[in-house]
Amino acid sequence: MTSKTLYIVVCGAPLASRAGDGVRAARAAGWDPYLIPTDAALPWLADQDLDDASVITGNRTPDQPRRTPPADAVAVVPATFNTLNAWANGNAHSYALTTLCTALGARTPTVAVPFAKKDLAGHPAWLASLAVLRYAGIQVVDPHDGSASSLRPLDSGTGDRVAMDFTWGWVLDRLGDSRI
Ligand SMILES: Cc1cc2nc3c(=O)[nH]c(=O)nc-3n(C[C@H](O)[C@H](O)[C@H](O)COP(=O)(O)O)c2cc1C
Image 1 (cartoon, helix red, strand yellow):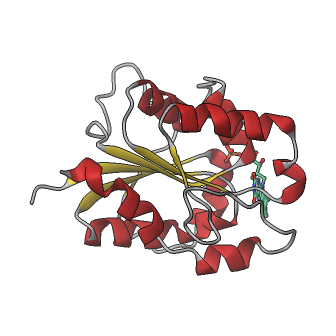
Image 2 (tube, rainbow, N blue to C red):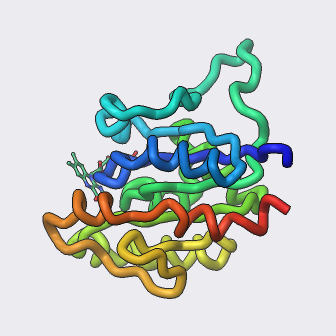
Image 3 (cartoon, rainbow, N blue to C red):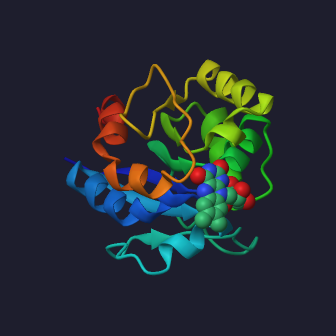
């Protein structure tokens, strides 16, 4: 089987601590993963074993060649309040957001795992952004249990535990069809 390309966009929240596990799980499932962290995600990546995955940050210069093959699928794990709202609004002010907006425009199969505690998730923009993204075909997965039909905000102080219990199969299994 030829590997297909998976972009893993990583935002700045505790689930970013599982990016290395995502690389290994994606490879085991036959994907060729590239990590695309936001600036806020970088502290969580610093001490992780990323299994020598390519980490793509910042925009390339105009004379640089492309750094990645085109994506067959995209996983946004975790998707912060900030990035999810910006993505839904078509804001492409960082490389990670440009990647996400491009994937949405191209209808590249994408799974997002939103990660926001109750106070943030109570902001009206959050629900509106989720509706926009779902309408455009993004699969939204609950970080607590992998459900794609419901999404619970995090209780305060539970981020590290939810991250620890998170299973990458919840994301990769939903991208399965895009590898056919
Ligand atoms: C320790 C820590 C935990 C955080 N947890 C979350 C979180 O669970 N969800 C969230 O949306 N933002 C969280 N943030 C805030 C984001 O990192 C911040 O809004 C940042 O600007 C997001 O940038 P990004 O969307 O480009 O990754 C956390 C920040 C820190 C320092």
